[in-house]
Length: 152
DNA sequence: GCCAACGTTGGC
DNA sequence: GCCAACGTTGGC
Image 1 (cartoon, rainbow, N blue to C red):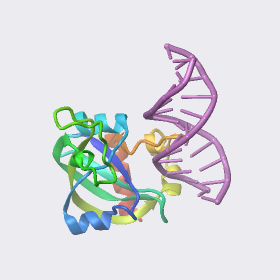
Image 2 (spheres, rainbow, N blue to C red; image 1 turned 180 degrees about the vertical axis):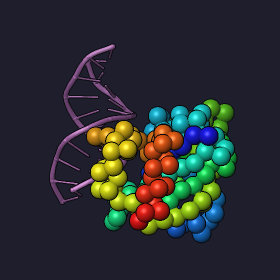
Image 3 (cartoon, rainbow, N blue to C red; image 1 turned 90 degrees about the vertical axis):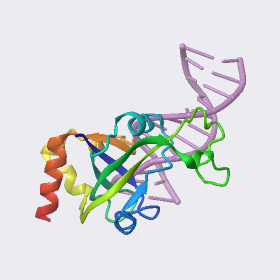
């Protein structure tokens, strides 16, 4: 089993939305590196840290689980969709999604607190200039974050 | 709202 | 293939 971090702006889709929906299709990713992770690397049963960006408080808001592995992003085929991409063809899709399931929500662990944790110093999330919306997380980092969630 | 960092596009 | 211009992300 592997571990990941997914970023979202909660005004667009939050951990509370996921709790309500139970399962959601993680669509709209339009970055090739993130796409490669979604298409090739996220596997059923993998655990996901759910990160809220551009909000208050910024930070990790909960955990989800991959329940369906990469498949073509249908929003790329829909001319009316904000994420429409005319260059993504049904016989040669450019963009991919996975389905994730709600596991738990906790009091947001603020980015400022995450930054102070030496054990998390190598997380991509905390590296300068890191913008990738789908990131790998090491097992030890994932477990450390869960411990922090229990302490808060 | 600013702006640093990064990704993408397109002219050459 | 280079790289300037442009667009986006996302913390502050």
